[in-house]
Length: 187
Image (tube, rainbow, N blue to C red; front, side):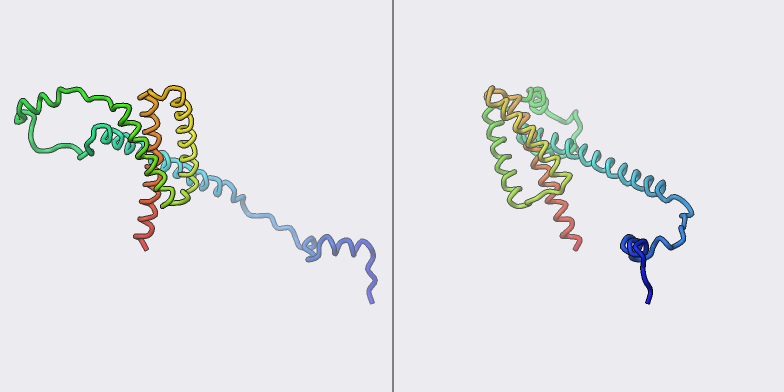
C-alpha cells in the first residue's frame, strides 16, 4: 500500500492527466504571419465587393429615381436613326426643359414606396447582417428627414430625399430577393 503525501495529492488535483511531465515541444515556425496575411487578403476582398456592390446600388437607385421622375423607364442607349433624320418636331421636344416633380407626386411616390417596403418586410423577413446594418442606417436617415418634414411639410427637397432613401431601402430588399432566388435556382 502506497501512502500519498499532501504534495502528491495537490499535484494530482492540479494536473489530473499528468501533462506537466510531458517534454516541452517548441514549434518549428510561427504560423501567425501566414494566418494574418490570409485574413487581411480576405478582408480586403470583402471590402472591395462591398464597395463595388454599394456603388452599383447607388447607380441603380439613381437610374431608377430618374426613370420614375421622368415617367418613363430607361430603355438604354437609342440606336438607329442619326440626328439628321429627325424632324423638326423631335428637335422641338428635346428643347423643352424637364419639369421638377410636384410636391403631390413626391408624396404619392413616398407612400407607394412605403407600401412596397412593408410588403418586402413581410415577404423577405430578416435581411443578412450587412444589409440589416445598412437598412437601419437608412431608416435612421428617413426618421431625420421625417423630423425636418414635420417642421417644413411643403419642402420638395425633403420629400425628394425621403423618396431617394426609400428607394435605397427597396433596393436592399430586392437585392436580398434576387440573392435568395439565385440560391434556390442553383439547387
